[in-house]
Length: 414
Image (cartoon, rainbow, N blue to C red; front, side):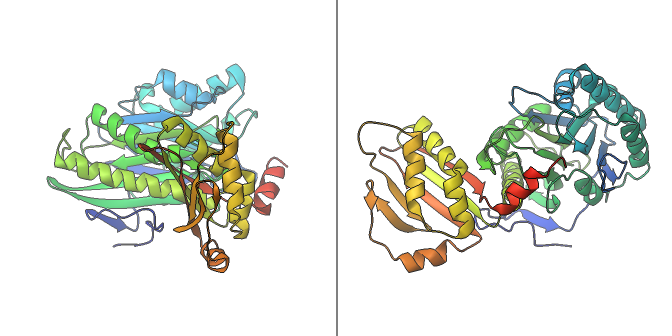
């Protein structure tokens, strides 16, 4: 049954070989989400994903923060990242900046997960999200893992997606059917993220499953390429998280093998790319009180300059508040680019908003202000910036910045 609701952004096209499904996990996977008492609200706060396939392959990517949370360190150092069979993820507590106790707690979580999943400890990844600097309530964690093990099912992706939310206004998940030349496979994902979002990803957790048969090398290649085009291209507040984790697992239970450098790999990669890019935009759209999503595209002759300009615009509080208010103040865009690229000569800068040129070679271009005001009142607004030269181009998706973001983060631990 097709839900037809996931690919909602005009910037992401659903590949022709992809059909949206209402839910459910690929063959070989079960998941669950439960409330174990980490969150004072009593909302779901612990989830598990388990693959029954002994030959499951996988790949993972993590935050590049200098302050790595205990579950990130433990998973990186104690897991076979190419053969992960299970994931234990919690919300409500990040287990970050918790010292030796935090590492011990992450290891205990891994051990408990291995027992209930019936797999080796080094095949269990651990992920956490929530408040930083608070010890984990391990009795609750252990109790939650036991409860989740009894709830595991092929339809558990919905409960799992709920269990990993923190300030997320809505759960983020999708199940896709992908028709390849060699056969049909399923691809599903569950993600969370709404704040502390910046490159290297975000306060972001994302778990992806497929019943296609992928080698560890193919898993790693496809995940690396698609993460660079999705979670590496978003910003809500320019803040780099301690806990970012993205994991791809392949059970192979469909019997369809995706070989390197084949049409199967190309088509599967397109589906994975679209899936992660839409999830990334959904995270930006959530954006802790966000009203609109912006996309800034910058082109020019210098890759470093193009990237710096795009990040400056996406992270500018002046640009972001203008986006929130539907204010076509393109001068703020010019200011942000100038801050990122200081120099002694005027910058020959072109700016277009929703296809309307507002700045040409560093000066105002004649345009219809009333029409522009209507264009920036849309839910998605695109800014295209041209720098001198040719050859480099990049994009960043970003949220606006409004009153709710301040309220949410001012009251986060109180």
